[in-house]
Length: 150
Image (cartoon, rainbow, N blue to C red; front, side):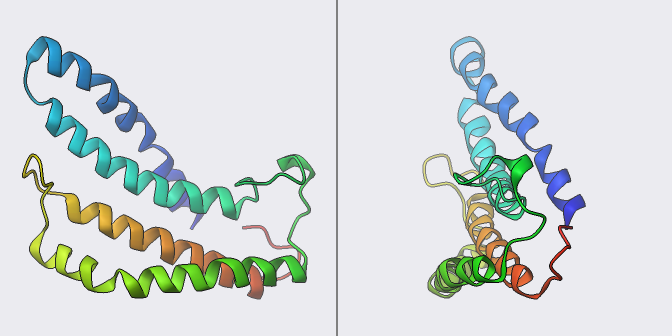
């Protein structure tokens, strides 16, 4: 999984470039700024699905108790169960409640409403990826050995 997270981290560069390019495209070129915005939205959704999951997996997402270097090598059993109890129901509900609309969006290859550019279905798929990765991480924290952080 780690190579997938590392590959997804590189999405931040084209995302930043697209967000920066919107102003010159709108004001100087006077074209393609909306297309850049649509593509940036897709990249942001995919990036966030992996970034939030990776941060949670590394123990740095909303970690107020300790600095990342001070984190123990693996969460205690009670912490793993608490993580599972808090995130698994949310992830399962999200997967279940959005199943019909996500499936319909993918079947139709849904477009963005304002520009009619293709790709909106990728944002809905990213929501599913986020929920699935959070659920997988919660399950992994329950079943992994105490010293394993990979």
